[in-house]
Image (tube, rainbow, N blue to C red; front, side, top):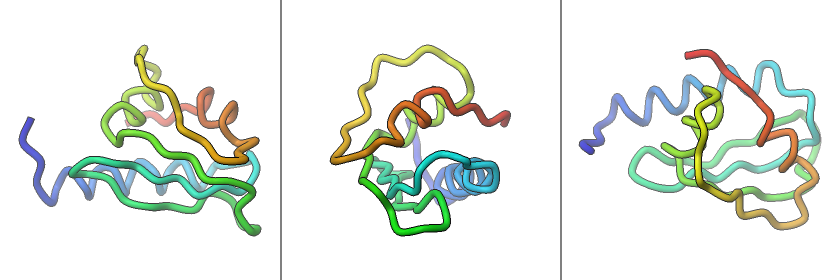
Length: 88
């Protein structure tokens, strides 16, 4: 796979859409890999930290099956992230 600035832009746009409709607990989302970055979902202080590969996470958000686990520290938001969907 080739990653460039446009890949990071796509990830940022998808996460922005997720954040706009987020109703789960506030959480820091760290997406790894060349297109990754750190994001905060929710308006209050984060209740935990969740880490995932950026490409795998976006595949899951689109509804595709993925074989990834979300690495979490004190994150009640994991279930909400696993079931979240964003159309893109």
